[in-house]
Length: 165
Image 1 (cartoon, rainbow, N blue to C red):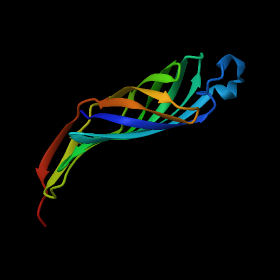
Image 2: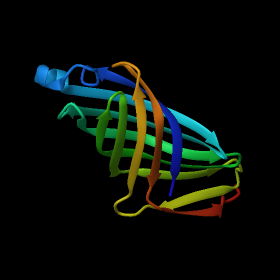
Image 3: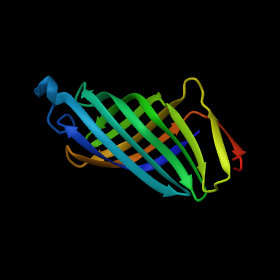
Image 4: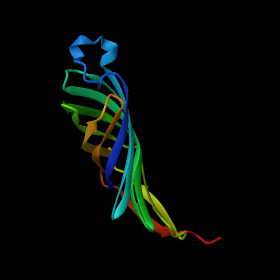
């Protein structure tokens, strides 16, 4: 299991997250795009990135799909990471605040160490999923700042000594 808590910044594309009422806009202006990246250093260094595209259903509810290239936690000597994720997300707008959540499936996982002597193999579950949730404040239709937490399912990793050549 990988858990990552991060301070996140996001760039919001298109027009859907502006303050204008959505009923007054044509269909194409209700579409939103988002690119988020963040990190936080508490005991371990955590990072995560995601891309999303969605639709503003009502002035307060958004629904979209997301691509999660990866998230990880690492400290001196050891790192854990997962990646290749696809999922759905929803956002609830409360003034300039957005509460959001996402759920989806991951395609890869990894464990690494600073030591050169270990090889790792992994056994991923058949449906290897993740969830994430958080809150952000939109300063304008382009930039927001917030906090999010992401966690994957458990996976097994086995270490063995690398053969000497």
